[in-house]
Image 1: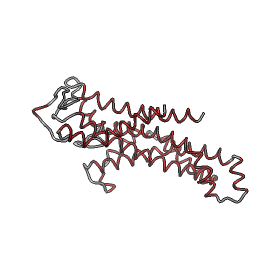
Image 2: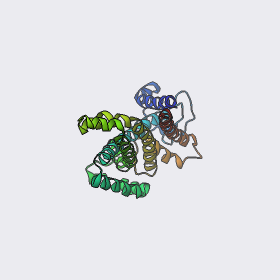
Image 3: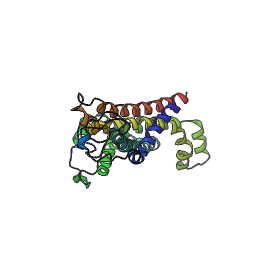
Image 4: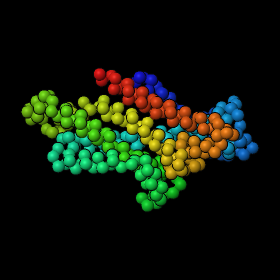
Length: 273
């Protein structure tokens, strides 16, 4: 399953990286409308047809992959780093710091994440110093919001695993030999947490891609004309009877990405048994 997940994610990443090359090969601009070629059927010139503005669906799907995958990966990595640091710190220090950090995690976990994300995503980005309507600023904003809510699961997982490891004999032996706490954490504890962290990160990527798609579908994520799989679905919902394939392709891309992440996480989990 690890190979299947990695292969599928690799194909999606390669497709995203090949977006500019695809535009050169097909001779089209993914962002330029062609009103005389609206809703064109799949052909050699437009392999997946065109949308309501005559733009090539395949090229927009590839450019959307660059946005959706970048947001998902950035949000997952940020959440993993924050969660790992918080979980390790809570397990290592214990006491009042552990209690404060875990109660903070419990509080965030108790919040209705999706409604709160919708409210926060609807706020004016200028409040936090980001320009309005720019794709890069939208990507940073959405990745930051997803990371702010996504670190909790990683922190709880890392804390539980670290507490178990810190009680093991090899850690006690290292401390008895005078090994510094920093070295114990970096050389003995953190490497043993690699598999749980990898599982959490894999699942977080799929969850972040899905969450970004939901926010963009609602008009609160990546703003057009920059394509993302979510806003492509939003654009296609009103045209589902005229051009049903326009909704199929971005939905299929989201499904394959989440499936690949779940396959990778499941494969890592099975390999540990």
